[in-house]
Image 1 (cartoon, each protein chain N blue to C red):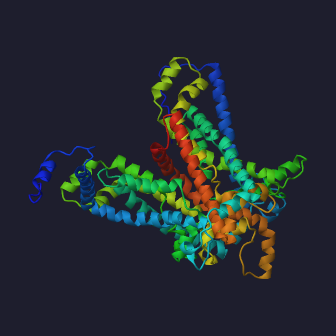
Image 2 (image 1 turned 60 degrees about the horizontal axis):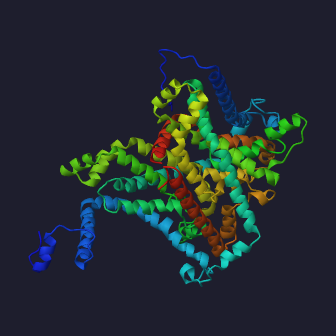
Image 3 (image 1 turned 135 degrees about the horizontal axis):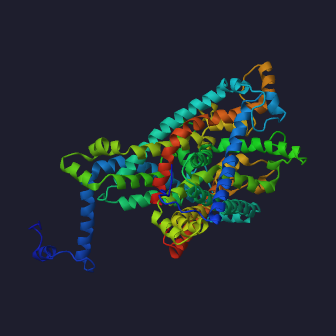
Length: 336
Length: 304
């Protein structure tokens, strides 16, 4: 196996089993050949698999990683003629422009406000729903509740917002009609800025709680039934069983979902907000994503918009990493 | 359906008073939830089946008033809506096909333990879930590729979701034992043959879940169409719905004066009808399809 043409000293070296950790140049060279050998062997054996992976990998390079590189646009004065890479470098000019802009604080407030509100309200409710559903016996009612609460998840954002608009319409909406019947004044819900976050959050709860509850129900299904039996034998009431068996059982899943939620605090989805915005409620409804869209695509202020977007992405990443480390320290579960 | 506790009461232990009270409370809460979720749906459907006058005067609140199919007659004949439907069907079909293909071709190889670089490639893909270039940089790539205002713009830029790659890979790892692959290899079966003849037939559940997740995503999406498309003829249904329902651009263009007048009167009713028509595929297919989504969530949360 060891080629004869090699000098004797090298042959003797190679004859001895490789020991990792030695510092000599020969063993460093041996390390590289071993890795390369393993890689080459894998390529030879699995070449077909590597081949079929190419299109998808190309997709990720082109549509995910090249845009990351393009984000360097945030540091340049974009010139259409010179292109991204030819445009002059301006450093943090656009970032400072953004931070000094009066709209900056409003954006941060609106975005974070919506996210926190949605988190505080929207996080416990699916858990409660799942825990309650778990308490009742199987049957028509249980299935009906699951089926019905799960359904709104599949409605498109456009349909969802349209339904909200229809129901809260000042003249014809059911809510205002009912209020008028009761002698109250009709309210133009979408015209008043302070209502925006509540409408946004609670409609989100309506739409997604059933879907989230399914995840928790799946986790609850994995809880060992013997734990329930033991609790019952120990005389635990239903509520005590919930606190001591159900909740710890879903804690891992809940933590993961919480991490994902907190990590995306600055990502209030564009789609729903954009559809719900109007000139009247813009004070509370303008979020970072919609701002980037308007400044960037509608006003063609590319560099500035990229800077804002980059700021958003970086903060998100930092948040995600922070929350994940925190979760790792405090509990057993974390994202990575 | 999901059920957590199999209960067999051979000796029935009587529940304490506190527990029964709690259980009643639970039932009440769940019934309330059921009604709260159900009501808007029922209301919208009822309004769509009511007469234009009843809707315009705000008389409908739970059941149809003056039952009428007028809204639907107008709606289903509208060319803009039909075009939107056709486009959405196109995007959903081809989009899902390409997405599922790409997802499986990248997830399966990454599930093979001896594949060199699988760790790196997995990180390569997962990292895109943590950090992204942003709206403008992505838009520029699409523009430079000449995809703006083409049908491909709605299919390619969003083709693969890293999250689904993770789910698919987990599925393959759990369900295709390495021994099977090695046995096939010893029998002289090539990797592609193995994938095509053995893995795919065994992958029914994951293919179904991927297809459904991607299909729903495609059908409901409007953002990509909003930023990448200009021609009205390429618009998917959601964009058409948006212009009618949210931008209040009443149902389409070139009609004569008489029809236009009628449309004004119908305007309110039409909105409800459009919502129903727009959700029709979902409402119809949902009962049959929800079982697979539940399974999909199970798979996803197990990985989590």
